[in-house]
Structure formats: C-alpha cells, structure tokens
Image (tube, rainbow, N blue to C red; front, top):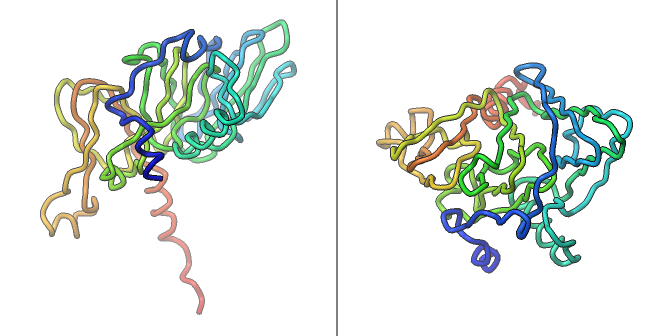
Amino acid sequence: MACCCCCIPHYTNVSGPEIGRDVIASHQMGSHTTTGDSMPLIEVALPPQQCMISEPGAMSFIQKGIGMETSFDDGSSVNEPGCCTKCKTCCLRTCSGEGASVAHWTNNSDSVRQMGFASPLPGHIVAIDLKTMPENMLFTMNGSFLFGAKGTRIDVARTDCKQCCCGAGLFFQKLDGDGKVFLNAGGTIIKQNLNNETHRIDPASLVAFTKGLTVDVQRAGTCMTMCCGGEGMALTTISGEGDYWIASSPWSSQLAYALGFLPPKKS
C-alpha cells in the first residue's frame, strides 16, 4: 500500500489531460432534464453512436436501440489498453470509491434515444461540465460519480494521511476530460466560490472541488467543543481560489439518524 501511494501523485501536483493524446474527446450528449427533488431522475437524450458511462446500477430505463456493455475500463484512453493497464485502472477506480466495473451505454440506432439515471439513495444530482473546470479536472469525494460522457477518465489522486479525518481516506477521486459528469450526494448539493479565503465545513459534507484549492484538517475547537459540540474532533478546511460543492445532508448523517430509531437488540 505504501508503494502504491508513492506511485500516485498528490492532488496538488497532478496536471490536466491533453485531449486527443491522454484521453479521447468526450462523446456528445443531448439535453437532459431532471424530474424530482429529493430522489431525482435524470433523463438524457443520447445522439446516435454516442456513449455514456455510469456506475453499475445507476440506470433507470433505456429506449430501444441503446446497448449496454460492462467493462473494467472507462473507455477514456486514446489507445486500447492492455490487460495489465485495465487491472491497474480497475484497482485505482475501486480505491476512489467506485465499482470495479463501468457500464457503457451506446446508442446503436440512427436517431436520438432517451435514457434515465437515478441515485440509489435519497439526495441530489448535479451536472458539471469538465470543459469549464480549471485544467479540465475535478476532484470528488469517494463514490460521488454517478454517470457521465464516455471520454471521462476516472482516476485517483493521493491525499495527505490526515485527510482520513475529513472523510476522504487516502485518495481523492479525480475526474478529467472535456464532457459532462453527474455527481450525487445526500440532501441538496450547493456550489460555493472561494476567492483566496478559507471555509471550514463539516467533514462529511464535501462533495467536489476544483484544482487550485487546498483541503486540510483543523481542530474543531477546545476539548469541550470537540467532546460536546456535536461536530466531532476535527473540521475540514478548504482554501484558495476556486469552486467547491457541499452536500446539505450527507448519507452518513442520514444513516446515523435512522439508526437511532432501530429497536434495541433483544438479549
């Protein structure tokens, strides 16, 4: 594990992809509509011969003419990767909180077809165009990616060990390319902007952030505050210049609340 961490670049040192050389130009998708608030359904118009990728189980419906394939590769490479490369990317994707395999949805017909995606848990789904992000790159918390255009590379970037205290683990998920991606998280996802300032946020609330921002950990306060304040021992700090997204009700908070209503275990 230590050797693996050393081979993976730190999130502050990664560089953006060169479209057409590092990753393919992303497939095109038509318009998308969102139905619902707390458990939305995203309907996507998929043009002929275009492809979307998603987490397994994210699909709600597809019209006739759309075919499904499952692969250990996200399909972003310009050249067809070998078996060893596929195994490596599969392992890295697993470290980023995503599944080992990726579902590919291709419109094999000669006309636009509709398909729908939804999150398995109560929450919100947001669309982000990587083309508008600094260096065509976005860092997300583990498991945030739901679906996106083929050509999106799902990779990881190393964090500091202390990021384990802010819910990130040893890796951030790194998404890059020039297409749209859709992220999901609990509650409502809110976008915030930083202009060379620092925000302190709940450790479980961070969903994604752009390159140029620095994520750190800070004590929540005095011993009394850490023990009785309800915010835990540490808060996540995010500073610099850029955008970040937070969830109003992370799934871990929803689960912790629901567990309080379980009946006591009978002896």
